[in-house]
Each structure stands twice: as C-alpha cells, then as structure tokens.
Amino acid sequence: MSEKMKQRVKETFSKNNEAYVQSKVHNNQSDLDLVTQWLKPNSSWTVLDIATGGGHVARQLSPYVKTVFATDLTEKMLENTASHLTSFDNIHYVIADAEELPFLQSSFDVVTCRIAPHHFPHPDQFISEVQRVLKQGGYFIMIDNIASENNDLDHFYNTLEKMRDPSHVRALKISEWEKLFLKYDLQLKEQLQRKKNLPFSDWLNRTLDNESEKKQVVSFIENAEDHVKSYFAFQKKKGEMIDFSIDEWMVMTVKQ
Image (cartoon, rainbow, N blue to C red; front, side):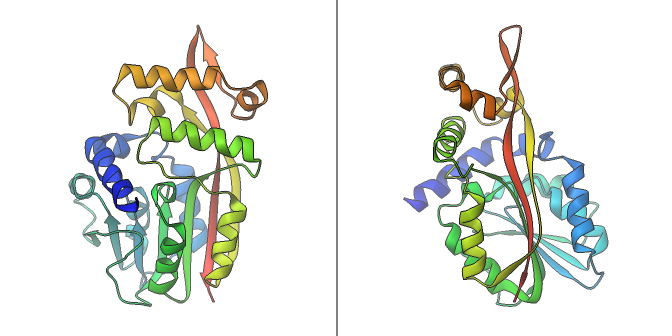
C-alpha cells in the first residue's frame, strides 16, 4: 500500500513540479521568515530539508548556514527546483524517501519539512528518521496542514483533499503529532496554530486537470453540512468558489 502511495506522489509532483514552485501558498514569505526567526541560524550548521518541493525553505536558509541538503522523493521535482536555485551554491540535491533517509545518524543541526507530511504513508517512520539524523540538541521544524480534533471535520477535510489530490494520505491532528514527538524524544519549543487561506482555483487546478473530477470536488463541498462549510469558511462570488481556509500548524522541537 505504501509503495503505491509513494508512486502516486511521484506521478502527481512530476506532473505539477512547476506549479509547486510558483504556488502562492508555498511562496508565503511570512512563515519562511518565521523559520529563520525561530532558528536563529548559525553559519556552521548543516541543514536537511525533507520533501523540499519547490525548495522554498532550502532557499530561505541557504544564506545563513554552511550547507543545505534539499531532498525529495520525486526526481523531476528536484531537477526543476535545482534549475530555479542555481545561484545558491551551498544547496545539494538528493533523491530521498522521508521515511528512509540516506544519511548517517546525527548528521544534521537542523531538519525541516514544510507542507509535505500529509503525503507520507507512515508518519511514525518519518519522525523516527528525523530523530535519527538529527544531532543531540538539534532542531526540527515542521509546517503542515492539520486535521481538526473534531472527528467529523477531520473526516471531511481529509476526504476533500484525497478527492483533489490522489497523493494525499492524511493530515494528522496536533494531538497525534504530539504523541509522536513524545515517543521520539523531540521536545516542543515553539508552536503556532493558524488558519491558512487557500485560493480555490489555484488549490484545485494544481493537482486536477479533469473537469469531471473538479466538479465532484465542488459538489462534495456544496453538499457539506452548514457547520462544516462555516468552519472552513468557503466563499463564493457570482456562484464561483473563490477561497476557503484550513488549519495549519508550525512547530519547532529539539532533540533531547
């Protein structure tokens, strides 16, 4: 099952590699600036950016640290990102599975992963690998979409994302992430929960090009109960869906 999911990830991101580089959501500078603010980077550090996608975090940290390893499961995504970041000569690109990293233990001062863990079939293995490759006292920053602690809202959101993106596995609840951090001795240092506004057309068209599938997504939203529509703040203009909001969590931990 997990190999099938990882193949879907490769297919989805190979097809849409440029869309993720240009995405307004992924280019949100405010949370990239917050990464730097929380870390207070040291020029001697070696950083690992897992599932780098369009390379936004790697690009952000590159001027402040010694070396950045930008990894991704999808070769075409990584090649496209590297072509955009040729002026950053301390970024190295490695094809790597987030759940089976090709690095020795205690290799990195910092590990980052942004808007990606909801694609990982085994979050437990992912966090285990993060802990393994981090140095003692090293920092891990994760930013990702999260599910509500309310089971109905959790089910709606994850079903919606799966319809829109076949490579989506599951957005976890904060409580589920906290259990994993505790299990692997990653102590919470900073956290921020917030609403993230998504332009509907950009969100929908980034992964779907089949009109019938797009209509199914819209229909699923329109048939949702009122309290669900209210929670996700779906907005229409002249009968067209224009935007909505989801929950996002940014967290920094330190390896004990």
